[in-house]
Length: 230
Image 1 (cartoon, rainbow, N blue to C red):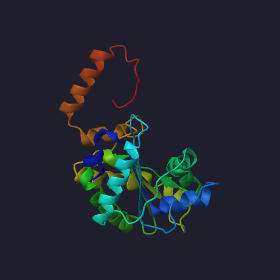
Image 2: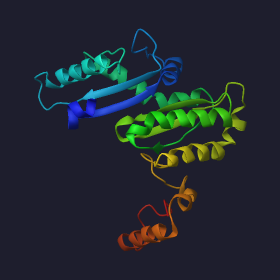
Image 3: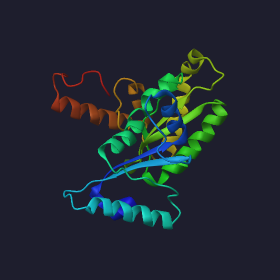
Image 4: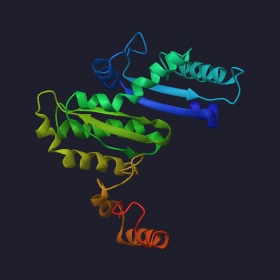
């Protein structure tokens, strides 16, 4: 709805679950609940304009009204000052940090087609519930490009070391679900070194050879990010 109405003026669209809001409120001093009633899911949306004529604000109101009529949105609040805008974005920006204060956090950076994001989250949650009962998924991210940080906080009754020891097993399960939706195992953060060993599982030898050839043609002395990806 937002993309069809705003197009390129839709500059940010962030998905956050209630558990993420709760963790921020618990561990980040000075934060407050953005709405008076708790909801399962939140979206932090920004419409940008080139002029101070109220056009962006009007467009945002139109999107919210249309979404409310279709029962997509049940509640909303619009920032009316820079301070309020900063407070809203502070919740999103502190979401990653506070998970570490809650204990162990296994982090995933995947992407699936935008229309499949809800189904991916349901499928990954179901897979995790069987694999590690009590684990707490905290999926959030840039909904507009299908990029979800499917992070997982440790079960409250599990030792952190025991939880972190299962990192590879848990990430492997999440990756499998993402690939099942035609997605990717790495989005915003790239392959780097951490996921380098997974390249042979998602790319054929022909594809890898082509990637190496392109790398060599542009970087014959291997001085640009050496050891990353390939």
